[in-house]
Amino acid sequence: MRTVKQVSDLTGISVRALHYYDEIGLLKPSEITEAGYRLYDDEALKTLQQILFFKELDIPLKDVKEIMSSPYFDKMQALKNQKKLLMLKRKRLNGLIELINKTLKGESTMNFKEFDMSEYFNVLEEFKTEHKDKVIKMYGSVDKYNELIEKCKSKEDEIAKMAIKQYGSIEKYAKALKKNLNSCVTFTLEEQYDKFKKDCLEDKHPKLKELFKKLAYDLSKDPSSKEIQQIAEEITNTAKRDYEAFKTDNGDDHWYYMVRLYLVYPEWIEEVDKKYGNGASKFIGEALKNYLGDKQPKLEELYTKLAADLSKDPYSKEVQQIVEEISDATKKSQEFYKLDEGENHLGYTAELYLSNSTWIKAIDKEYGSGASKFIGEALKFYSENSKS
Image 1 (tube, rainbow, N blue to C red):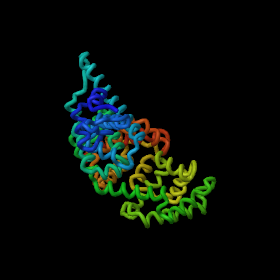
Image 2: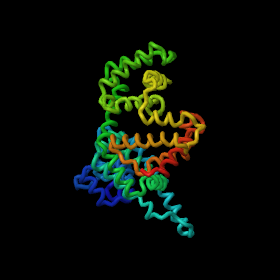
Image 3: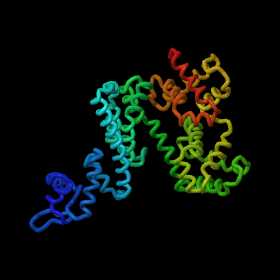
C-alpha cells in the first residue's frame, strides 16, 4: 500500500489532483485508515496509469470516468487503443519538432496562417461533444473517433492542401465539414445500412438468415446459375421490401452500393467470410451483382460511358459532354444528400484520378489500363474551362 504522498512522488501527479480524483469518483483509494489517510494498492496504481494515458490524449476527466465505469470497458483493449493514439500523437509532435529545426536552420517553411487547421479540428471536437450518440453509432466508440482525429492531425499538411484545392480555404472546408457531419440524410442512411449489415451478420432477419445460408451453402457453384440467381432475386426483393435505405427514390442506387461492399470493402468481406467461409463474400457479391445486371446508379453509368473508349481525345466535345453530365449528376447527388463537397469538387476528383496511386490502380483494374489518366484529364479540362 502507498500513501497519497508516495503515489504523488511516484507518478508526478499532485496530492491535490489525487484528492480531486477521489472526490469525483474517478480513482478511489483502496483503503482509508482510521486516521483518514488514503492508501493505494497496485491495482489502484494500474487504474491511475490508465487515467493518465487518457489525460495525455486530452480526453476530459468527465469522459474518462464515463469510459472507465462502463460495463463494456476492456482494460487491455483500451491500452491497445491508447497505444495507437499516442503513436499518432508522437508522429505529429516529431513533425512539429522537425519543422522547428528547419526554421532554426533558416530553411523556408510553410505559411501556417494559410494552413491553420484549428477551425477544422474544432468542428471535429464539437461534433464529438454535441453528438456523442452519433459518434458511437458512426465510428463504434469515442476511442475510435479520437483515433480518427489523431490520424487527421498526423496528416494535417495533406488535408490542408486538399481543403484549399477543393474548397478554396480552410474556413470554407470547416463549414462544409460541419454541415456534412450534421446531415440528417447521410446519417440516417448510414444507420439504415448498419441495420441491414447487423441483421445479416447476427441473423436478426429470419427470412434473410435462411436465404443467405442457402446462397452460401456451396461456394463451388456458379454464382450466375439459375438456382443461385433465384436466391439472389429473393434476397434483393426482401431487402428492398423491409429496409428503408432501399425503398427511397435512390433505393436502387443504395442497394447497388451495398452489393459492392461484398466485393470491395475489406472489413465487410472479412466479416462475411468469417460467418460463411473463405470466399463467401465474393461469391455473394457476384451473385447479387449478376442479378442486378446492367442496372447502375446514374453516375456509375456515366463513368462507364466515359471510359468506354480510351483512344478518344479526353478534350473532345463528345467526351466533355459526358463530363458535363457527370458534373450535373454530382451536383444533384450533393443536393439530395445535403452535402457540401466544395466549389472545385470535380477538379479535386481529377487530381485523384491523375496522382493517387491507390485510386489509379483501382480505376485501371475496373476500366482498363490508362483509364484513370484518361478520366482525370477529361475531368481536369472541364473543371478548368467550365463557366459553372
